[in-house]
Length: 239
Image (cartoon, rainbow, N blue to C red):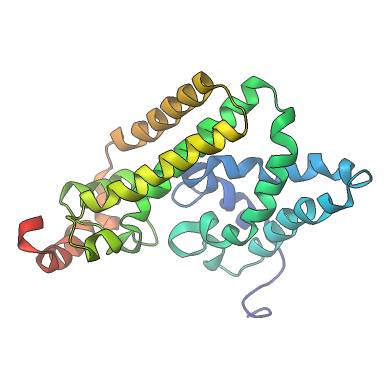
């Protein structure tokens, strides 16, 4: 249907991109919600700097295309926004570089909180991403936390090198933390603000981890069946 699976934009799909309870940007990457806002705010700068036109219009056009994906593909599989919006990250960070220096402390703090929370959510969900069913509310707790507790992760370079599943997640986590604080230093953001935003973002992710899934959510996740198949394939010394 449509042209290569793309039809006219639909308000429900556009709203779902941000607010879907299982795959929306407010769940996985809340800082991306400011993307179209920054794009619109940056449009008046086009007269002074024509190069801003591409990153300002790019996100808006991408949102229109995604909202036209025929159901259920507007969700982007397991990771709605992060999957289809990755191509626009360069445009987003271009806009942030133009705008972040002019942000007041409070909005900047909230932006950093959203970045840290999103990074934590994507990191934990990404460690078991292919085992998350298409329909799964709060997969951070319902699916990923369950698998991590059982020592089951997505196959990665650490596992290939002989590290245990949980230990294999330490190198990329450390690399992200170092890169994040180095970028904040380059942006001349006060260290206390960075630490405070990091604590708040991690606390927000921890709040989702603390939410007990309902029996219906557990049944829809199929986590027991998936774990029973995958666990025997893990090395015995890892279990």
